[in-house]
Length: 614
Image (cartoon, rainbow, N blue to C red):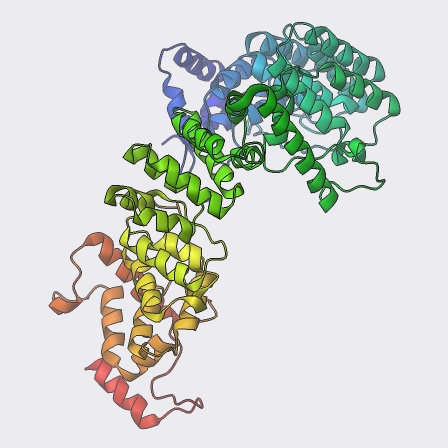
C-alpha cells in the first residue's frame, strides 16, 4: 500500500531504509519477497515491486550506498519474477553498471570494486553484468529513478566519455577472462561476444577452451561446440564478417571438441525443429540457409545421424537422444527408416510405451513421428498386432499416438469401450486431408467426448464439407459446452464468421436459428464480415427482443422485478448473457421498418416504437 512512497522513504532516511531490507533478507522467509509476487500481467494493473526498485535505484546514485544497494538487488534477483515488466532487480543492476551510461555517480574505481564483490558473492549475476559490457554492436540503456531532493545524482547518469567506457569494459573483460571456474556456458558467452574484445583477449579465449576441453565431459563439449558452430559457421556467422584468423581458430576448436559418443555428437540436429545449417558445408556461394537446399542438407544429416546411432546403440541410443531434444517427433520419423520389418517395429513401439517419468511425453511424440512415417497400411497392421499385447491404458496411449485418420478409427471399432472413450477424450486432433465422411465422423466423436472446440479447430478449413445438422450442433456446443481446459484451443473470430456465412441460407436453417447463433457469438462477430444481419432483422420485427436485451443489460431503476422467463439465476451464466446483451445493443444498426432497399416505413417504425415503450 506504500509502493508509491517507498522512493521518498528511502531518500528521506537512506541508512534506515537499507538496514530494514538487509535485516529482512537475513531472515529465513524474507517479507520483501512478497513484493515480488507475479502480477496479473495487465498493462494497467498496479505492480507492488516498482516502488521498491525505484527506492533502491534512488539510493544507488550515492557512491557510499552502491555496494549495499547492489548486494540487495543481487539477493532479490534470485527470486524469479514472471511478468513482462522492465522493473526487475537484475535490470536495475544492469542500468547501474552499464559502461556507457552508468546510473550512479560512483567513479569507475568504485564501480569496479563493487562489481568484483558481486562476481565473488553472486557469480551468476556478476557474470551477466560483466558479459553485457563487452557485447558488440548497439545496445539500449534506460534511465534509473533519480532523487527528488538530494543532489546525489547531480551531473551523473548521462553518456560518459570513450575513455571512461574503455577503462570500465577492460576491467570487466579481465574479470571474465580470469573467471575462477569456466564451463560450457561461460566459454560459450565469451565466444558469442568475441568481436567485442581485443585480438590478444580473443586468443586467450581459445586457449581457455583448449585447456577446459581436456577435462570436460562430452555433453558439455557438445554444448560449447554447437555455440561455436552457430557463431562462426552459419549464415548469421557469415554476416558477422569474421576475420580469417578467427574462423580458423573457431574451426580448430570446433574439431577438437568433437564428441566420440554418436548420440551426443548428433544431438544438435534434433535440439529443435529448425536447425541453422552450416554454410561452410554448402559449396554454393551466396547460400541462404532458409531455402530448399538447406532443408535438404539438414534432412540428409539427420538421416545419417539416426542411422549411425541406431547401428551403434539401437533403441538405447534413441532413448538417450530423446532427453535433450525439442523435436522428438522428428527422431521417431527418421528412426522409421532404420526399423523396417514388422517385428522390429512392434518392438520399437512397445519400448516407447514402456518409458515413463519425464521421458513419457517425449517418447509418445517420438512414437507419433514413427507411426506417421511407416505408412497407413503397415501402421494399421503393426498397431493391431501390438494392441493385443498391451493393457487398456497402454492401448489407449498407442491409439492416441497413431495417425489421426479413419484407419485408426476402424481399429478402434474392435477395441473396448474404455479404449474408445479414452482415445476421443485424450487424442490431439489435427487436420490432414480428411474426407467429408471423416470430418463428419470426427465431429460426432469429439462432440460425444464434450470437446467441441477441438472439433471446430480441425474442421475450420472445410466447413463446406460439414453436414448442416452437425455444423449447427457444433456451433451450439462451442458456445454452451465449457468442459475443455481454458486456453487449450482458441476460437478465431474469423472462422466463426466464416462458419455462419456458410450456414446462412442452407436448407434446414431458419432465420430465427441464425439469429440465435449470432447472439451466442455476438462478441466474436463484432467487426466481423458476417456481422449480425439475422439478429438485426429479428429485432426489427420484434420489439420484445429489443426490450429483453435492454432488461438484461441494465438494472431496473424501480423496485420491480423482470418476468420470470427473463431471469437468470446462475451468476456465471448471467454475467455472460448480460455482456452479450450489452454488445448487441451496441452493434445493432438497422432501424425498424427499413426495407431491403433501405427505405424506412414510417408507420412500421412508429408501431415498433409504441410496442417497445409499452
